Length: 385
Image (tube, rainbow, N blue to C red):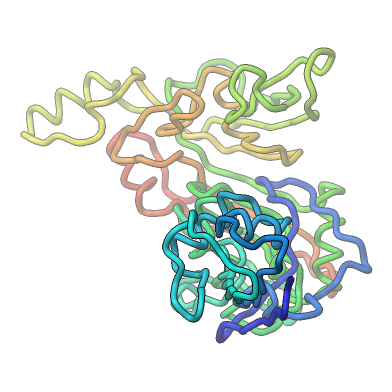
């Protein structure tokens, strides 16, 4: 018998509506009547307390069996975790044994604390201060995302995300789904992103991305010197790799699910010297860097233009044309030039302002790790390529 249930709100809780995880450049569809905030913003951050009275039917039964009967929507493993964490109380004292026999009339107190994912949508003031804001107006903002920053909370990254920083940056983001995020960059991809600050701008930006009206250019450092045509248009569908579900791959749509994907690659620079030459120079100068792991005899710096926005699109297409990105281990790349994350940077973002109609264009040069990598690997880059 359940006597009562009550919620105790955690302090400073802020929630935005959840939705499926976004992938880089993926089209996001949110209808105009989607909720702007939850009915109870702190609900997902509350400690739920249940008062349960043991009835005659359960007299003499084990504690874990009684809990399973009275809380049928909770798994046995979850209930065991509650017992182990001291959140099941008998006469005000934590019940330590799942096998304890209960008597009719006894009252159990069960506390259900928020899971990490329940508290994911909270403001992070320290992170907000680290945001590199390239442009901000009443309706939208453009940021230069640092490598290593996750965009949206998900398994393994429930805090420290861009969304958490946006919630602390301004209260307008607390009223929007995903805090106004309309597209995503992978964790280890750096560069420019546009974020909405009003619902009107958000809906418009989503439509523009779906209509391919937001133009995006990336810079990538890849293995092997580029040979042949430049620019080169790559048009091959992308779907989940049938042999490795953790990866994406170019797929045959007649056999596997996927979507059309188009990327343009333009050569900016081939390495001035080979991997062997880099090793020789290191030995001569008595230094040892990540380049000792080089697997490629030479490298190239590429400009990549997206015409579609599929998961890992640039990474997949680059590997498909035999130029995996430096340090992109998922698709065959290895560290080089001191770079230990996939060498991909969102360099340019251009679109028509969804509210004012003004032409907007933003650029962000290579971040320090890729700049240093270009210098070490002999890839010419001056910001004006």
